[in-house]
Amino acid sequence: MSDHGPVLLSGAAAPSRLATAGYWTIALGHLWVLRIHALATGAEAMLFATLALVEVALALEAAVYAIGSLGTRVGLPLLTLLGRIRLLGAAMAWPWLLPWVSELSCRCRVVSPGNGVFLVHVTTALAGLMTVFYFWGEVQLLVFASPASKASDSMGCLPSPVLGGQFRLDKADLEETGRAVFVPAQGQARRGLYAGAGLALLGHLGFGLTFAANTGFPPWLLLGALLVMLGRSFGQLPATLKGQEKGALSDWRILWRREAPRLVVRLCELIWIWCCMLELQRCEVSGDWLPVCVA
Image 1: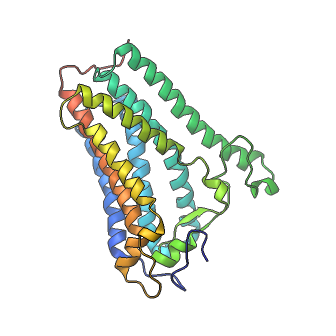
Image 2 (image 1 turned 180 degrees about the vertical axis):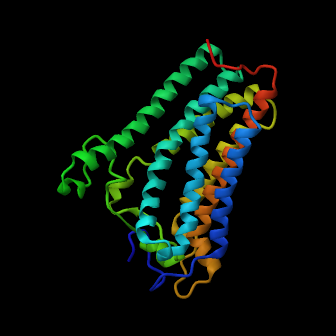
Image 3 (image 1 turned 90 degrees about the vertical axis):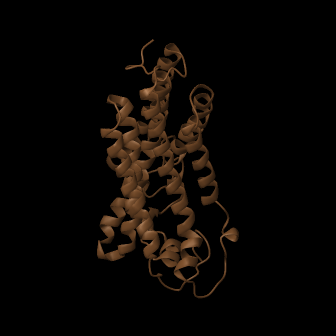
């Protein structure tokens, strides 16, 4: 039995080409949005960098899942490294959506300049602290920890290790989808990695309501956040709702059981970032747009 659910196949399944194409499409979609962000908007400095950081992290995440279909053909050490970067990169990138939306609300005059500057400072400090929090946990493990403590789940008040901790193939993923995905060997290593993604979603839901009450229709920011909330809920559905038939499974059933929820979540996140772009472009052409956020 696998740690993540029943073992459905005795060996690794053949990766779904449809799912692999979906991951590559999502990765290229994020790069396409990043290109539009750079060329078709006037965003600069932190307003550009904070959203661009998330775009790059999500593109890399989708690409890692796509590359996982190649298995040992690209080498297990490379897949292990990509798995580490995928987890830590996303964990460190997600919180920066908070200062981005704070500055956007200030420049769009959705909030007063004084409140906007305060929100930018607070959310930037929060995102910076979370980034340092994860990074310092890895530095402590790699530089200061003894070999015995590296194998331990406990890191005191610091986040559990990602770069320095042991990684292993996700057996359930390999058996059900044929996709080589590396995850932390200890369940403790997952603790806190998705806090930034949750905070970013909550922040965008709150700011989305404010934008919806003060800007035109459709409320892009709110729609994107609601879509991601629904997508992530679908991605967490219990296995009983995804089908648990035993025996030989077609590519379509394998895709539905594990790949489809994962693809839906990442597609919703791509649309969310695109909605952020649309909100930014609408604000830039409005008469209320501020070139800088100052009190």
